[in-house]
Image (tube, rainbow, N blue to C red; front, side, top):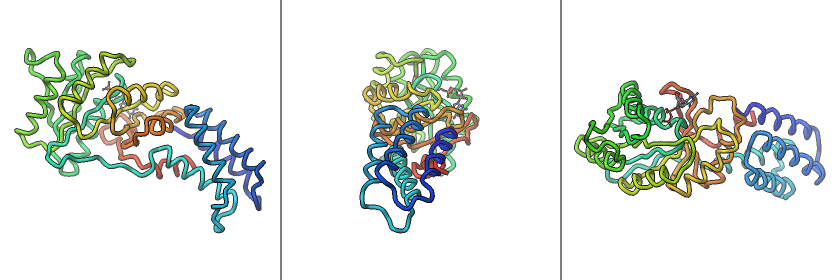
Length: 298
Ligand code: GDP
């Protein structure tokens, strides 16, 4: 991910090396290159526009630091701008004052929600929490079983509907899951929800009903970074539908061009909180915009 974008930006900065001062024409040429590189990486157009306008304005302003040469200044400005579009500061999970903390996962089918439930559960377990995974994806025949397998691998308990008891009603299962967590003293509940291959009103309503029933402290929208340009539209639909609190970028280990990852936080104005980087349960980390920006500009 990002290797082509990274190469293109580095090549652009190279052209500025050795220049004593940047003329407006130099800045404009650089901004044009950055614009092309971002568009070719599948970054959404509104994000590209905002990004390049901010870079241009700052590169032409007087706020420049004497300690940096013009090329370094441009790198710093692009770096700061990347950090900003990725959500600025890292955002940690918000825990409830009165446990259990409820974390709900939403996203399209195949985005990596169930895998994330296991990753998050294992990670929180390692920090001394006692999470409970709740299987509210009753749409896909094998989803409940898949969560049970993931829970077992992660060493985290799973609450699933008994056959014939509330089956088919994910809202009831979510409520029962939270009640179970209270009675068994789990301090965190991770609610896995159903996804569809595309956005549809019924899916969004179901997610909203679950949200309203269990009042989650966090709603994490999981997005497959490989889906390219569609990411922005999907993210916006979920932002309008369930109104998530944070983004999880999954499949960052893939070879996508990375534009989705760079657009989603900015378009939805929600921070990226975690990155999922493989199929293994340990392929997961809190997301730090500044580290990601340095990785791209390395
Ligand atoms: P869900 O339908 O949203 O619950 O998605 P799943 O968790 O079932 O994941 C769909 C597929 O993507 C599975 O084959 C996972 O192993 C795979 N997957 C999930 N997260 C990642 C990731 O970060 N990287 C890679 N390469 N594969 C992943």
